[in-house]
Amino acid sequence: MPDGAAKKPSRIHQRTRHLILDAALAVFSAHGSRGATLDQLAEAAGLSKPNILYYFSGKEEIHVTLLNQLMETWLDPLEEMDADGDPMTEQLAYVHRKLDMARDLPRESRLFAGEILQGAPRMHPHLVADLKPLFDEKCGVIQGWVDAGKLAPIDPRHLIFSIWSTTQHYADFDVQVRVLSGDTPLEGARRYLDTLFRRMLSV
Image (cartoon, rainbow, N blue to C red; front, side, top):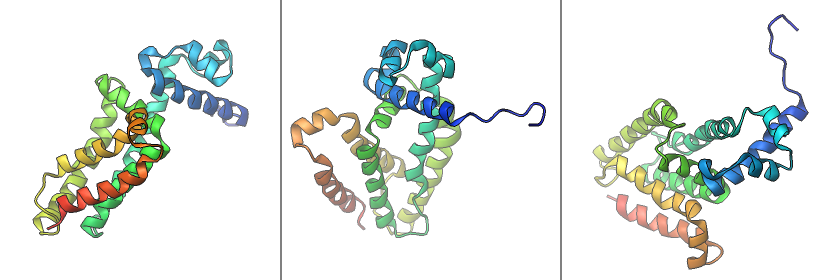
């Protein structure tokens, strides 16, 4: 190995870090960054507290690592909106991708929501450097469709905000949704949101 080259983490090291992060995701999404403790993280991971601290410097590093990994996942559905596609198809596909995330990644959604509700102290740089340029780009795409008469006149920013709020609700308020609507709320949500956005956006 060349002098100064970083040693590649072993598979055991990588597996243990992944185990800790997965356990931490459950703890942070349930208790928030302030309510979560190292004892809870260690118990959820099935490891001792000193073992946790061998892989991470503390609770804050674990939390920041999770948030950094989450940002890329969060951007992907918006990235996929295709300026060359059919405008209505692209909007409904975006709604579906966000609903799929609510179904498949509810813990990640609650982790993200918790960070934003605290004022985004750790993620603010990502919001500025990563999300804002992408958001502005896709708003420009939607505005182009509106200007071309392919979508009804609508503010692209508030359209995207509406998609976020109506889809992420099913993850962030999952317990309430299930009590009020039954065990498979996303089946009805997909049909309802298709109708809602189609009517809103149709020319």
